[in-house]
Amino acid sequence: MTDVAASPGNSNVASATPDTMSWDSRARRVMMIYLPLSCFVLILLFPFYWMGITSFKPNAELLNYKEHNPFWISSPTIAHIKHLLFNTAYPTWLKTTMFVAIGSTTLSLFASTLAAYAIERLRFKGSPYVGLGIYLAYLVPPSILFIPLATVIVQFGLFDSPMALILVYPTFLVPFCTWLLIGYFKSIPYELEECALVDGATRLQILWRITLPLAVPGLISAGIFSFTLSWNEFIYALAFIQSGANKTVPVAILTELVTGDVYQWGALMAGSLLGSLPVALFYSLFVDYYVSSLTGAVKE
Amino acid sequence: MSVTTMNSRNVVTRQPGMIARLFDYKPFLIVMCLTPAIGLLAVFLTYPLGLGVWLAFTDTTIGQRGVFVGFENFQYLLKDPLWWNAVFYSVFYTAVATFGKFALGFWLALLLNNHFRFKSILRAIILLPWIVPTVLSALAFWWIYDPQFSIVSYLLVDVLHVRSTNVDFLGTPWPARFSLIAANIWRGIPFVAISLLAGLQTISPSLYEAAMLDGATAWQRFRFITLPMMMPILAIVMTFSIIFTFTDFQLVYAITRGGPVNSTHLLATLAFQRGIAGGELGEGAAIAVSMIPFLVFATLFSYFGLARRKWQQGEAND
Image (tube, rainbow over all chains, first blue to last red; front, side, top):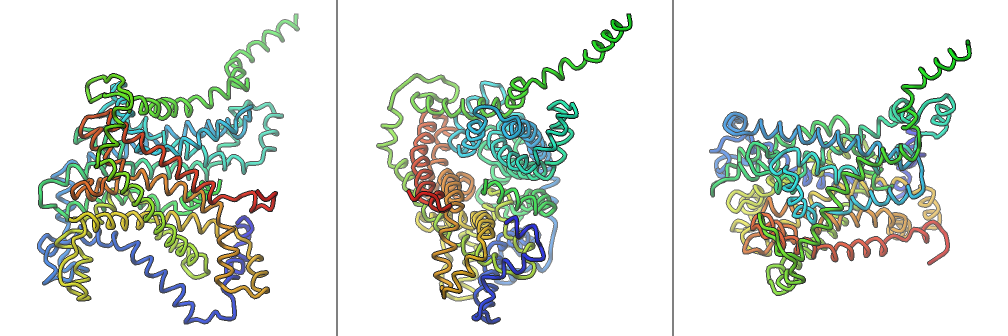
């Protein structure tokens, strides 16, 4: 992996080796690679296309496949989005979600940077076990925890408050971020810190002035990942938040917009589209960080 | 005289350093650094985990502290056909969805491991289903599975003329079960494919060259090089995938809420229905706790069944 990454000029040769064989004709390549690949892409993207096209269709077109081609819009409308923004509490939900996501991301980044630094760089007896313990915490799924957590939240008087979510989300963010950052800290040469120690820097100065600036890519990866995970979180937000104004987008769309027997598919899809956009935008800006943190976390 | 002034100056310059010195004292610094993370995890993860096990042995309801009732909750669950139904569907859902995700995801990873143009863009696009909030893509699936206006039914009935009636995706138990599994597979493929792709790129091309010189076919190269080399990463990704598929909640809650006639309840959705919506915290906790043995078993199975690291690194065979 490192070899391939280190020599972009050679990566061509390295990854192409398996298929530079005598049987490698163009027709076969199309059948074996491009055709299945396009099927995959088509299926993986279709729900988004469908979501997008539904949110701009007028209701008449939406439910009439006989006269209108369902795969296209003849007269696009922004009525659904207008309805969402002005007739529902959608802007409030967006704000709450943003607040919760930023709050829990900051908290978990702070906690996990310090923890990762202590485990990887301050090395003490039992530091590998602390690392393992934090890693095991990632394997405890929220579905097991939400019922007792609800009683804990009530005890703390945080029920129905976004603060509850900010405090609870780190339970799955901290293990992930710590593990990711331990990997990054490992890649920073020890010698740099030793130099600073010899020059009389304190440990905190070393962390702040040397290790952290060098670990910025890792911090970005951990940050965007935490943001996405907290934006997408559902079960805790569903169990701990009751009042309409404090709901996060995923919960609010499902519980506030789905009403009655006739579903407002246009508004529902517009809400889903708008709720997905922030993470999708974020994602498109930092694709490489996502991929590296995803694969890095798995390989560790 | 001059000595004392020197000393006093030294004291003055060291004074603000007291706190800094404390922070430079390693054991203190270690404790300070670990406190936020360990504190958060202890209060909001370890304590609730223990509390959950305790709750499972009480008859707590919302607004009323329960008393210890021993195994009563579990005895009740064992006689409850709905719980057995949820156990069956959770296992079935996990087995079929994991198989689908890994078969298709591995295939996609192998496809992406070829060299072609726009590879990085394609890789970025493929991760999208995994990035977008599950509930929101689940809503899109709900709309795709609509009994009257499903686009899939439209394709099958009006365009391809394969069927004469609309598909009833979510109205009857078995189609609903498979529809949910399909949605889960759709969401899981990107994660599996991208993680396995990272594993594929670590396999040295020289192994394939050597195999080709020995006249190995494409299938033999896959079977005897790719697959064994991928085992460790497969084991880890599969462990994660099984844990999070078995405890899935969002997809089912968003699309069917356990219906029709409770046929698609997973243990997590049943626990939510009994525990939070129904207010029977003790019983809900018992259902949640009943997931733990399955999880431990699945983790051990996928981890020790697949991970053969020592053998892989060429160390002693065991």
